[in-house]
Each structure stands twice: as C-alpha cells, then as structure tokens.
Image (cartoon, rainbow, N blue to C red; front, side, top):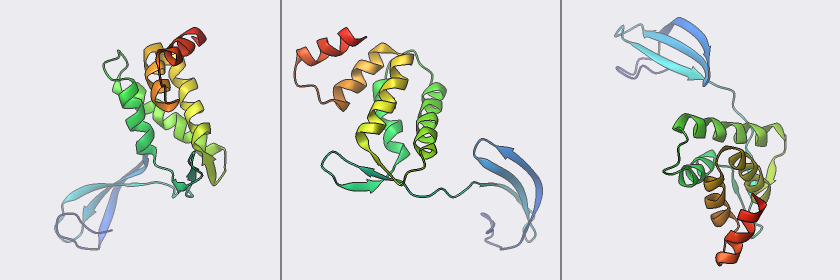
Length: 145
C-alpha cells in the first residue's frame, strides 16, 4: 500500500471495519506518520452486455446511473434513492451469475424499478429506452400505467 503523501510502502492499520463500499481500513504511514483511509472490496467477474446490434461491451454501472439521473431530473426523488436504485439493479444483474446479459433484460429491470418509484420518470426512461417515434408511443405507455 503506497502512502498518498510520501509514497512510502510501509503502513500500519489502526482501525478496520466493514462499510457499504467493502472493508474500510484506517492506516498510518510508518515514514511520514500521516493517516489515510483505504477500502477493500471483492473483485467481481466481468460481465458483458449484448447490445441490440449484437455487439458486446463491458458492463458499466455508470451508464445505469446516468440514465436514472436523466429520468429523475427535476423529480422529487433524492439522489440517495437514485443511487440505491442503481446499486439494487447492479446487484440483481450480478446475482444472475451470468457472464453476458442483454441490454433488453437490463432495460426491463430498470423500468420495473422506476415504475414503482415515479411514473413521470418511468415515461421519460421508456421514451429513450423504447425509442419513441411519435405521440402514439407515449399514449400507449400512459395507458399501461
């Protein structure tokens, strides 16, 4: 572990506890005696997403976060709830235990969760996800709700 202050390689752990991000360790550099925090989490296997055009790319949870942020923009839902929703979706994907997952599966998963929280955000997300072409597409989704 490199000290972020002096780049020394030796440090001692002064405190260790579980956290939402993994194991939190408070460390003290043996050279400069400054303290810093590190987090340890399990390395998860890579998941690939199969897109509509059959191309593959690495799963990126940030894409889910960005999509949710856009859907919930100016809606009365806290950032914490949106972040929690994103984490739940990622957990659900990882629990499937598959190395590949289709974007349609991810999209439907997201839509089910959004629908429970906020109808307007659901319509916004559906408009982008389902690539609405005209007003009739909106009417159809509104009837679903």
